[in-house]
Length: 201
Image (cartoon, rainbow, N blue to C red):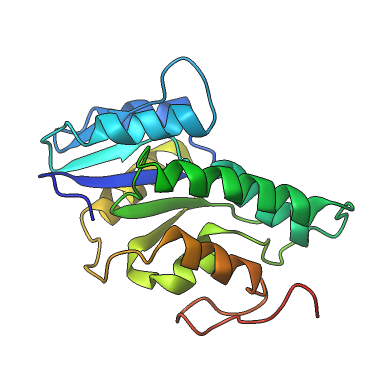
């Protein structure tokens, strides 16, 4: 478990430049962006830098599990291609190796920018690593803000930061990935036991 004065929150989802700029102007929030490049190493570096801030909240616009989340979602897309589960396992192994080498720790919370179905779009839920398996292992450590017009989304992010609920710390990353392998996206993610199924069934 991390020990520093700030609450570190990873922002997961497509964050606009306007949202990041507006949130970064808040007196209680420090914004940390990845430097130079995207990917696991850049995100891990951003999380390490976040530990050096003393503001009440540090919002990190990068996630070392981003590639894992993308490959997990790809496994459940209707147009799933052969080998997508192997791609998930590869990304999971890379993230696990970095985590075991202490190159990053999980943040205190994830704040997910959830997509809203618009007119003429598929209104059904899409498979989401953060709102599915990750939230199922620790419901209080994953908060959600629906995407909306910029001002409302900024207000939603700041409101969620101020109302984060305390809960048990994350389990090991091994356990999170085991949950992901057996999680069925159509299940409700409200308890650690919810959504248990097998990808091989």
